Image 1: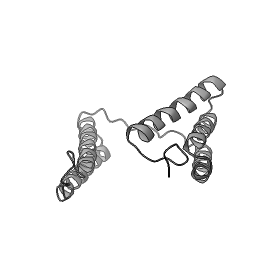
Image 2 (image 1 turned 90 degrees about the horizontal axis):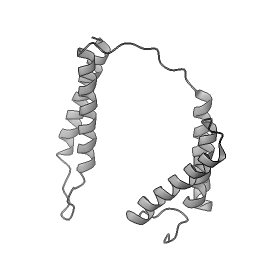
Image 3 (image 1 turned 180 degrees about the horizontal axis):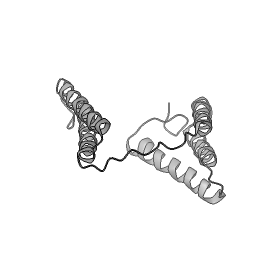
Length: 148
């Protein structure tokens, strides 16, 4: 049993309980089926499940200390720079042009070198995001049809 995992699991479980308790004080809307407290309660439940899994793992003795993976700070800096560029570029060229460029650049930074998978992933993920958020949920994305 690892004491650190046991303590972390108990602390995370307590945080989940407090978070859930605080969600009980969110006023319910009159027209919402799920209400504004749904997502906080969902997050509190997910945190509680993960905390319980950590506790079970710590008590069960399967919690072995392993060295952390080597930090890839260069990759982090590149991806952060790409995200800043994306945030600056999207209002000018729109979601449908900036997003596949960002995705392709991130894939290149991650070491993917085959052009076809890069193109298919960039275009496919952009189309899926636009379909779900722009069309299905009605989110107004910068530079897309229907944007005021």
